[in-house]
Length: 467
Image (cartoon, rainbow, N blue to C red):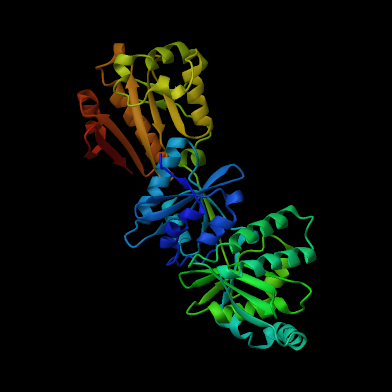
């Protein structure tokens, strides 16, 4: 299982190693978003194959950001590690907030996936020069608001905020809360609480802060972070009593900190009607999509019930309650199952009961995690063939075991080949894989007869069969 650590302020520098050059352009690929929204995203991070991988837990569901590669990063290896980890946990490998530039790769990687792109979470992306200059007819409203602000408060000025400004920032929050019109909105109150915490991090060199002052009084502030060629605005707050202060802040901040950025990201609107209206009025160059990929395996897409497969001597079909005694005897044969590679008893996580193994097989198929076929000779269960570990890329692993009193007659080879062909030609897999212990000569001969050897390690020989 992959080892993830919860994101904390102490981890920010390590995350920035990846985010500082990241060209995804979305606010989620920044330290500020991870810290500001960690109470709702519950982000945890790991370095995998030279990539930053962030795992979030949102409303009880595990989802992953798309891997952010370092100089030698391997995105495909990181994705494979995520998928393998999810397989081991029995959860789908959901890749969320996928940027536009990476969506085609996941569409190619996953033959079947449910893809969504909800309008609510799309980021507002602006050309940096548009917010610096407010040039052209479409920005006449912003220019008029700024003109009114400058007329009424001609001595107001913008400057950079540093950690030394903590006193005036604290006073700003008091003034802001006195005017705050959303005090009954729990979400807005929480957002304000997190914003206050973020402004205490101005000593970190990856955040830039700036504010407008009316004399010694801070009346507007903003906090941002540059990631690649995008300046991501995490916080924009101003006193509503100062008419025109918001567009004045937006322009001054873009002019001061836009630098060599091409884009300015003012994040999403979280379905707030007022925010949506305001952000659209600033003329975004685009609304950046955030795709959510929920890969599905071929078993889920193509199999509603296990079929009956016929070979020259055998019938393979779904387990039934009548099979429970014979199935339990098969599963509990320790001498035979030392080669199975899986501890059926240990996998239960509890005491062995009469229906335990049967119920596991039923549950695994109901969740489309495995297809357990009873291998029958003259109607009697003599073994099992299991297609499992569907990796969402069109592959699955196949295992087969035959009861001791029916060993040596080629039944395992016959059953194995039948299920492999069913998987490749009826379930539409592109690849079936298998492995055997190096000491297991019988399984090695069986697999060699119907599959192609595909490597080995200290413990196993590996095989595959392709369409």
